[in-house]
Amino acid sequence: MAYIGRPGATAPLTSADIPDNTITASKIVDGAVDFQNELGFLENASGTQNLTGTISTERMYLNDSYTLTGDVTVTGHLSLGTIADSDVVITQDSTERTITGSGTLESGRLMNDYQSSLTGMTGELGSTVTQASGYTLGSGVTFPAGHILQVVNYQYNTEKSNSSNTLADTGLEGEITLSSATNKILVIFSITGVAKETGNTSTYIVSQYRIGTGSWGNNLSYGSRNGITASTSKNNIGSVAGTYIISPASLNTVGVKFVFASQSNIAAAQVQEASACSQLTLMEVVA
Image 1 (spheres, one colour):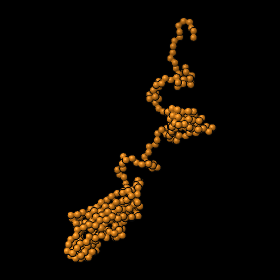
Image 2 (cartoon, helix red, strand yellow):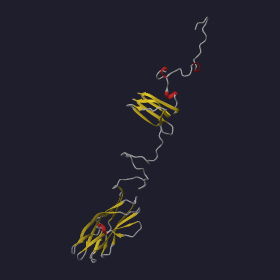
Image 3 (cartoon, one colour):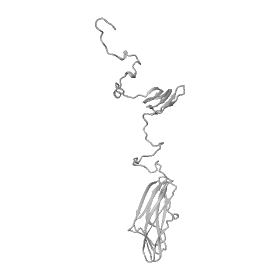
Image 4 (tube, helix red, strand yellow):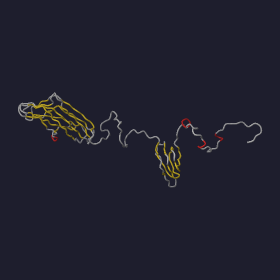
């Protein structure tokens, strides 16, 4: 522009001097915009993001919805996200559209809800997962059949004597409370005994059990009527050991004990010799 005399004063360029939509991304020098300081937040676009053509680079959109306005070919990595509390929805315009390509297309919420419960989740727990303190047996964790949930052990070594064939307590007994009515109890026992007699006799031992506060019953069906036999005028030290299963079929406390007697009703049957300890172990097993 030609002029006579001095040129007019200069003034800074303002946004009012620039028509809308005249500066494109290609006119902005790379690195000229400081995303951390000048773009303070990412905002989910309220409108619809149109998708069309070939996407060969890594690209991410944040929108409430997406519309296919043409066929899309993905050869790069395309991520369609949303910050809204809803699913990502992809629709097409009035024409049937396709999405093809050898790249990766993924979608989902950028921020997931805090997951405070494992309900509905599947998979395997890693080896580093530990049970929190305060866990109550049977409170929702499922274990495979044959898994041992709990073990209780009892010991007794006070000597007991019985000269009658009327059953008397050996002193060895214990109980276990089931966490599920369908589970079973594995009983493992070992009882030390001495048969003292003046004639041929033996000490026999019987296992009994009760469910809940019920009465004690003989559990002879599992072959627990075992004996420690002595010869004439001798003491015979021995032990009775075995295992069996109880199926209570109810959610309850199950008690197990052992009783003994002199088979001939003439000699002194003796168990729990002080120098040896008798043992009873009860295990809850998942059925």
